Image (tube, rainbow, N blue to C red; front, side, top):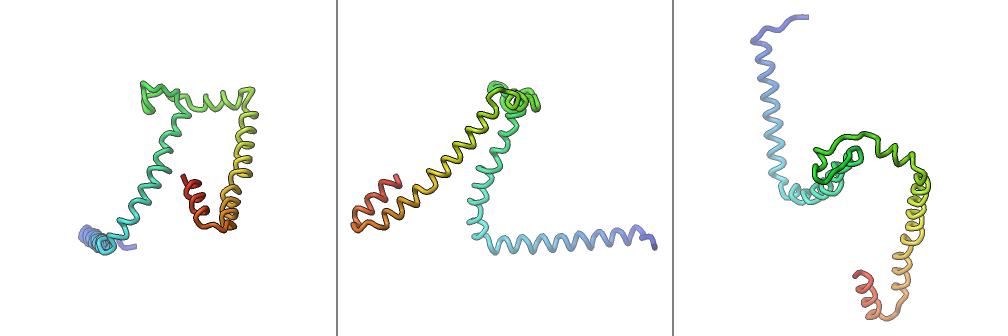
Length: 139
């Protein structure tokens, strides 16, 4: 295999950087051309960051001995101590069972209620009464 000289390496590096600059300028040109689409996308991205990713920061509270005066960062780290306490407690499995039962009951009773209400409202003959009930149910 032939070794490259310093000049050849510099030429290769400049060729690569020129290509990268060209790609970057094309990318910025495309972004500027479609700036309104990106602006419409901004609220959706903001929503996901605020409500899906920022709460993950709070997950570390489970691994710390949280003190409000110290805040999340300065509270002492305890690792899995809280989890060991929870899973070792007498009420652990009762709490887990109750959580699953409450979610199951919510699914059984709360999920069909809006569908049943919509079907019942669809069967009403009085348009005025239907609109009043719809307005009240939305409130």
